[in-house]
Length: 85
Image 1: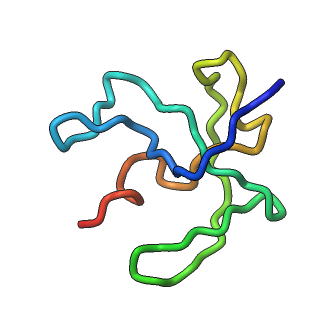
Image 2 (image 1 turned 30 degrees about the vertical axis):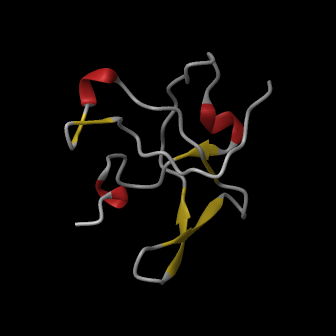
């Protein structure tokens, strides 16, 4: 399988009118967990953590399980880690 890489970390849910649109299903994950199964995350306050991939085995829009390519999200699988509030 092939996959595209780009520099955006997508949240699990699309946002509509400022709220997560959970009824639309999940976005395709874009966070790579390549550092011994972890992703290095730089937070808005300047600190950095190493996060483990969360269990997520759904197929993406291309019909591939993103976890097989070490793509995914860390816990919690919702939009709270992407919210600046």
